[in-house]
Amino acid sequence: METEELFLDNQAENESLNTPNFFVTCLFHVKDDHVEDFRNYISQFVIEARKIPGVLAFDVVCSCTDMGLAEPKSIKSHVEFMLLEKWVNKRLFDDSITSPFVLEALQYSAEVQNLVSFPQISMWQKVNGLHAEALSADRLNLGPTQQRRNSESNFLHYTVSVCADQPMYVMTRRRTVKKSVNPTVLLQIMCRLAQLSIESEAGCISYDILTSRSDEGKDDVLECAAWKSKEEFDKHLGASYVQQSESIKPAFEDNNTAKFWMRHSDGLMESNPKEIFRMTPFLQEGME
Image 1 (spheres, rainbow, N blue to C red):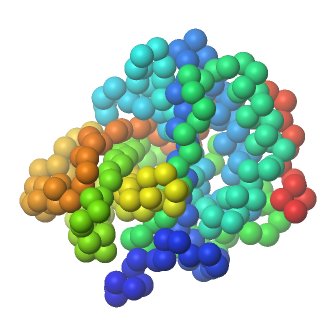
Image 2: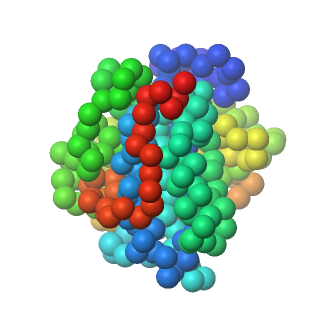
């Protein structure tokens, strides 16, 4: 693949529907005494959010103390959850913010004060190709709302068959590129490493390289990969090309360690969440 085809304009104003590669993360620091209700609350929200036109994937994950454990990670009296969202483009994401059920969800959270701080939203653009979900035309969800099973996840089009009824471990690592470094060359190296992981390791489900679309952290790069198990990730760390990739560390201002998140097979914290807040069902007209 030619470089100009691989790296899309990170500041493009006229985004094409033919290049779906927009990605959003939303980090929540939930107070310990609100975790149970939050699991239902966020699952209720995700189920409705998946109906929004332009959504390719919308899942919630929780931080893990250890990749082999299914318990959320508790730090300083709070538990971390994160939304992973794949969109056709930024415009459709922006349009979704004013949906009634989104505003109702925010209002509920403010009223019960279940968070330590306001959710941290970061916007990204995938540079190593397009979202896998977009390869299937019916995933674009640009027309009238499509009917889906509430528990169905669209994180990856083959995830359920690969990890049926098993948790999947998602890795994220955010790093800042030094001003003196050529970002194009660095991204080429990172994309090649991601490609090798997918092609040569059976345990690697996905490996995305993303650049920031936010004003804050505009020089940041995010790695977001999914693994079948801790053992498979340990094998990845021992691969010769991963060992050799240590040479790119000086290109970053920081080398934050990877964070790991548990994702259930349906991409929800509760498959059949109880109603935590009154929510207006999503309607296509609400996007107009």
